[in-house]
Image 1 (cartoon, helix red, strand yellow):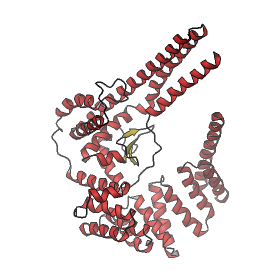
Image 2 (image 1 turned 45 degrees about the horizontal axis):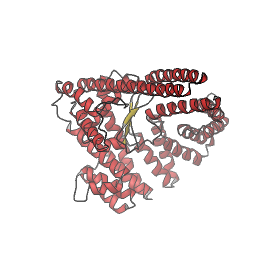
Image 3 (image 1 turned 90 degrees about the vertical axis):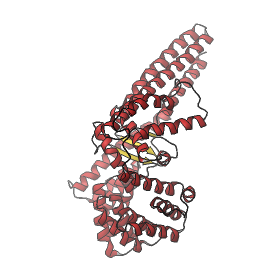
Image 4 (image 1 turned 90 degrees about the horizontal axis):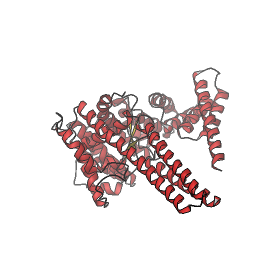
Length: 457
């Protein structure tokens, strides 16, 4: 009886843990970083962030490589947009509706408050386990099993009700932010209708959302339609400039993540800017460099000084084994958009890859400026480390390597590189103090990893 009870308790608790883990979106997907995409996200989200009473400098909207139509927030003020959601959006207004909803989660602190729901459900589960165990101890085995099963069902229902309430709250908050920013809610309703169609295709015919983490899309449409239609912004048209930027970003994303689909969606008979964009990335990734260059040249013919078209041309040349030819368009791109550090990093890469020592000073300058603006780019630190190594500055090369390993979560390597940097840097200097910070953080992370491994064993 004791062995049987112990095993049952383990299975029930494991099931509960796995359920709660599955109920929270995973943040392990790879980030897709692109200067033009991040600029679009900033342009369309900043008015909504202000409307939510948040600081645009503290809130980030980022793209992750995942084909599912989804978006989520995790701890911290970060909104994660799946690539599948962006490509499924028909216009920029639909994307704004999704971002507004997710900002409702951020402003409501839902990523943190989720543990309130978890704790309540866990308490119900533990109580049912205790009562079930007591019943089984006096010989009522079937009754005890029934109590435990019922308890887990009630706990699950409690948690689902909690998450549905959070989703409804975020819906209403998002509607408020759209209204305050003067953005129509039509896109939000259109996107929920798109999700409703998907639910039908997946044979989700439930009459209510009792056993779901989210309300049904039909319920959300009904709750929000009248609210949006009363808003003065309901009939406000989409900003043409934002829509044009959205179409470009969507096309280049399709070309990047699904090259084969891109050439079907954007055939060569389509001579629009989004079509050239999509085909340029599709041909580049498909190893058709001449075709990719022609598409990039077609874009530059329409706007010779567009920094993103210049960046694309430079990327095709650089990654096609022509780093020296990539330098000119990338220099021009950096001059046209000096506040775009990722373009500067690409220029630094091209300068280093040219293998011309006379370019190293320029590479060092542009890379240092890039990491000063955006120090979360591991590749930028990698390139800067190469420059320091070529100069014979092993201490700062080690510091750059420590920065890269720290960003990539390789704690042991970050610790080793930071200690190497400290050994060669003047004590008390800014670089020494930065290496010291990385060493302290990495050492603590290594200890946590070790303790976690011991607990799991």
